[in-house]
Image (cartoon, rainbow over all chains, first blue to last red; front, side, top):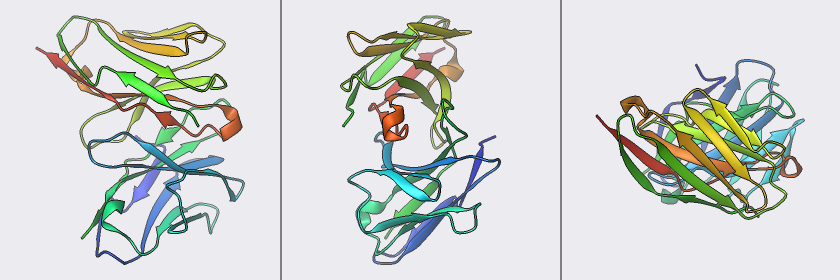
Amino acid sequence: EPEVTQTPSHQVTQMGQEVILRCVPISNHLYFYWYRQILGQKVEFLVSFYNNEISEKSEIFDDQFSVERPDGSNFTLKIRSTKLEDSAMYFCAVREGHNQPQHFGDGTRLSIL
Amino acid sequence: GENVEQHPSTLSVQEGDSAVIKCTYSDSASNYFPWYKQELGKRPQLIIDIRSNVGEKKDQRIAVTLNKTAKHFSLHITETQPEDSAVYFCAATQRSNDYKLSFGAGTTVTVRA
């Protein structure tokens, strides 16, 4: 079983709309990550989050994207004004602490129409 | 940033034979190298990892070797079984970038019964 639960499993949205993807760890993880995987391609890093702030982000993670952990449990990725090219699988990953591996959730398949 | 190259892109082996996947990385500061297995439509699952202070690590039929000087690492699967069929991704990372994973392009392994 994954160490993190992601919802929804599949999201279909009209282009231009906003989507929020959610990630809930099952234990006390300190480090959170979002990755995306376009169909048939490799997994790409988007952003890492520690101590309630972004610690690293990629060039993909532009002003269209934001993350937050509003209630100390859910970790969310918001994509504003979605584009066709945002269609991908979005994975949340968590890490308990230093020298611990990252474990991925089952992902959210985002389809932009 | 880190750039990870992975070869081959596809690999077909007879059941019982060995499979070898090779990766190279560009950033000499990278010090942690996990391998993930991804079955179709599923999340990447960590199968083995190695840190830069170790040259080789083995877990049953899976082994990973690391050559820091040459900046390459390899995954070895012995006595392959049909359930080993999947896409395998190597990754490289380091603590200074919060362990964000830079993935290789993946290797599709098919084990023929």
